[in-house]
Amino acid sequence: MIEQIPSLIASQRNFFAQGTSRNIGFRKQQLRAFKKGLQKWEKALTDALWQDLHKSYEEAYMTEIGLVYGEIDSALKNLTRWARRRCQTSSVAVMPGRCYVVREPLGCSLIVSPWNYPVQLLLSPLVGAIAAGCTAILKPSPYVPTVSDTLQKMIEDTFPSEYITLVQGDRQVNAALLAQPYDLVFFTGSPALAKVVAAAQAPYLTPLILELGGKSPCIVDKEANIELAARRIVWGKSLNSGQTCIAPDYLFLHEDIKARFVAAFQKALNELYPQGTEQAKHYVHLVRNQAFERVESYLKDGKIVAGGRRDATTRWFEPTLLDEVNPDSAVMQEEIFGPVFPIMTFRERWEVLDFVNARPKPLAFYYFGKESDGWDMIAQTSSGGACINDVIMHIANPRLPFGGVGNSGMGNYHDERSFLAFSHERAVLSSPTWVDLPFRYMPYKLFKLIKKLL
Image (cartoon, rainbow, N blue to C red; front, side, top):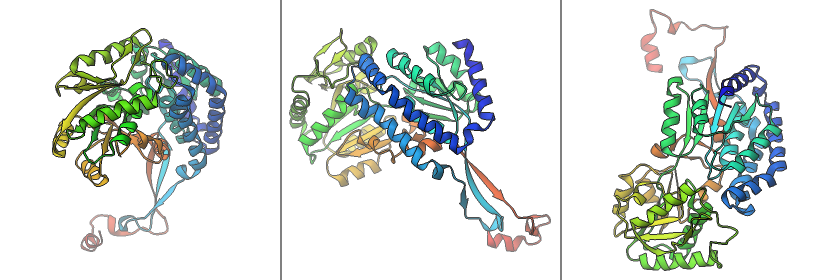
């Protein structure tokens, strides 16, 4: 496959050069084919998600398949409006010329996705690529082989390879793909791998969309509704077994409510999973042995006060609260990407602000307490997204931008922003020929007048 990569890219560049994908009718036709193909392969994809991740059909649909359907439907409904030429007000300097913004496709794109949401994080960006008029090479994760095989069959069944194609393989294949020039690279994964992507594409000055992660803080203040906060936080940390880029990563509890919250957390976990999580249909397992071992290693960094049970043979790992952690320990330095939840405490909110602002900017920021205090905390911090009295749900509204800042990523997407991510906004001035005003020409005789007007 490595030997074929240059020819695959060349065929896509040739296809794009023909101008077929620029046609709005063609884009809509391909979006409809995309939806039809997803419907045809939906069961196979959800079965594959169960096999690779122990992800139930319900969770697979809500967090993967359903979101892609929503992106396709929105693109079909709004594409004509998104793609139309926009007239802009002309400044005095260019009058009587007319000014426009033309949204045009960037060209040949590469979309690289991770294993935690392997369907959504590959196919949602693809909606933007198709809507914008780009071609795309898709690279799924090798850590979910059943899902990746099924995605390849679906893509081959739905699109011609010179337009959309999927390439599988390990890091050698990644390196071979990244050695080639593209008009856009859309990468979802870790900050460490993002640096590899950025370095590989730097010689080509390729624009990048980097959707990364980080340690997203979850603050529970003394005025919070403790029971509701615990229930929503347990859900957010249990979703995909914590293998979510916007999962709450660590807890910052006001010291006055710490004991109440720990008890409420355990109660909420028991209510969500009355029979426990080990045999629960709706509880995802860790993706592979190395992930299990990494998450398990964090347990030495503190004292288990809730949960902690696990099984290496099935990679089941119970949601776990970890107290008495050191801020310099591994569990507080690395993105956990699993169901372990270290606890920090605070007395005054400035302690939280100092802690968060001294570290790389996270992908999400969560605050439970008075809404006015939540807005104050948001105003004094920076993150890709945020919730007040909730977790994760900001991703559920496609009209909100999704993306990171600083170490947690660059660029954003969803809905129209997905279209824009794969587009270039081109400035166009159309000047008339019936008049040719003299002020711009040397020797600038009207300079004083023009200076006042400008």
